[in-house]
Length: 51
Image (cartoon, rainbow, N blue to C red):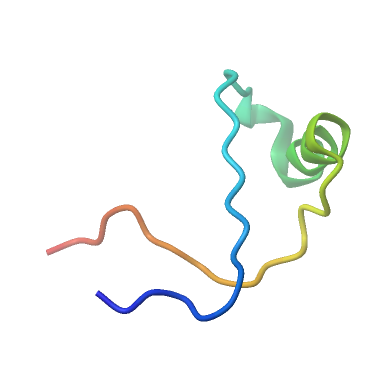
């Protein structure tokens, strides 16, 4: 496995979330709870892929 080069921040929230809020509502939760920019994307990871 090839790891990322440089420092990588991984943020995980363990509280239940209501996904019916939509993208803007979820982004607002990230801003309020974590003080982070939800649209700052430095990479993408997939948990599972179809066979």
